[in-house]
Image (cartoon, rainbow, N blue to C red; front, side, top):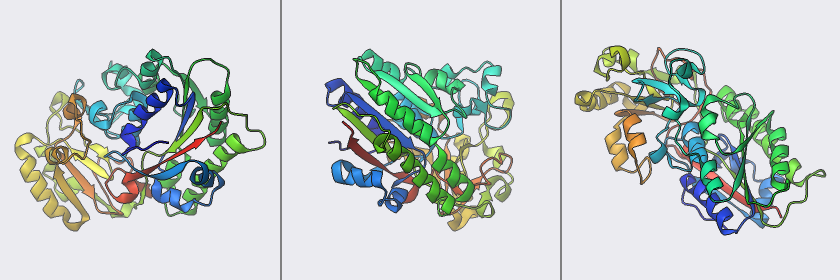
Length: 387
């Protein structure tokens, strides 16, 4: 039915299915943080058993970094991370000379959500255009995007979801019901329905992926989809209706006490960073499982070597030029990523985090992602004909 080498190919496959007529309606559900390791824990669930028996279910490579920002932007733009350039929660916005948080449209080091707009930095500067939904519309496909009401609609969504009918949802059961309704709603054109569920990721950050709360969130998400699509009140789907399930990444257990703050390990490190707006050192990019440092080019070699010595076995330090050459960000790397990507990346050892002490957000997590361990970097694809 479908064979993909990795997550980055998913939007293109959706487009192919709808434009060629191989499917009349396609629903994609992205279950945040529900990587392959966690799918394997739930293989007894009726929904996954259906996929095994009547469709397909298997592992698939995530993109690097294994982050939500990278993957939802791929779904909303149709571009791999190497081309759209929003590779992590915090990234440099070159036009502003500062590090930002694209999904909340805020500065990385200070200020409330939507602080960028107040400073005159609109989403058209950092969200790739045109959206995937606009691209589909140009090919005769209509789209629906179902997103958590807690943060949708947002400033990021103004560009990222342009061309789709946006439906905020109140939780996974509501999202699943909206998905089913959108897949059967009247209309003559091919239709794409994208739904994003974040309860599993939230439970992992709060409790860790080994906690019972994480397992319960995963089962509740599958239960909600099973009930909406196959329960007693489920609609009758037309022939040519296809369901795809996937995730952006997995998670690993971490703990605040297993965090190394690089600026405390090396107090002079800030003086080796590139200067941004106002002459201040650029704030760190990335997050606790993949710290990116904007190091002045003449100091990259020194920072890689000395920071590695100070960290020891607690992490590995890489020049991002070497990561690019090795294809970690995919086979195609365009100017959007190159202008945002920091010069040095720190990948903490399994179970640890590495961060900057004055950017405290995230170091309270019990579960996190962003690195290259198999648990973080292996997602899945399930496919099932509904009609």
